[in-house]
Length: 214
Image (cartoon, rainbow, N blue to C red; front, side, top):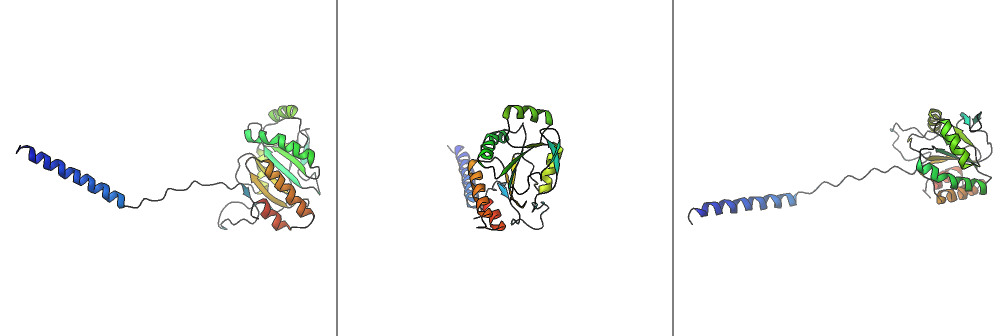
């Protein structure tokens, strides 16, 4: 029994040390878990971004660029003057892009006062093949690297498809939506363009509403 006592004392001291360490750790405040970064769904002119940022500003007016049309000839993005534009950047390899297209076709059918324009950031052959099956009812412009250059002309810096640029009838850029469009986005656009056309709101209010700030 006498020989067992030193071992028991050693075990007791070890247990006390472990309990002491655990109590010490429990008293130390844990650093908060970092929050996941969020990519804004909409970027607009005059955002509250840090002025020192290197991110380009969204263009205020429709830039002038020309891309190949689905028919094969060059076509300017300014081919539809005095009409609001919904300019949808997409590709045949982009699943969310393809989900948008039937809705955009339906929107174009019901809103002849707004011109939908698709810009395929893709190679010509797959776009032509897809267009034969899809039967677009709105114009398609095609350009792989030229399509990204067109995006850069708008000041779009997050190059992830799909994204859509909205302009007013006078060519003012209202905003850009990154990610897949849904019916509520188009309903919101229709209401904003209607109020803007009737001068119920000004350009700044239109941009803010499109961004979800009002």
